[in-house]
Image (cartoon, rainbow, N blue to C red; front, side, top):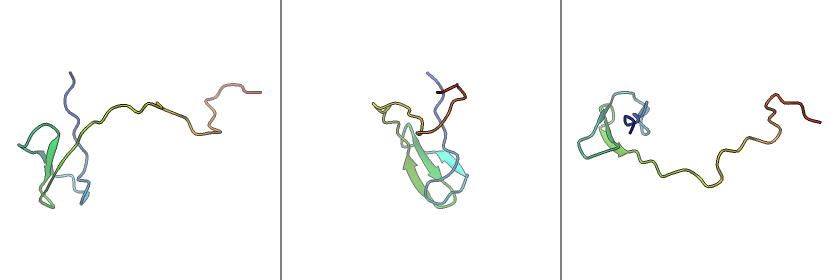
Length: 62
């Protein structure tokens, strides 16, 4: 199992002063705006990764 992913900034105010919250896994608190939030991975989408139409990967197309 890998280490938990940390958010780079607060989704409410954009500040970077974040600390893990004692509530549990995925919970964070922002010292700047005094809000707490939780991140949760929902899963992979069934459609997978799709490239935009017209995006060439460098291959020769006829």
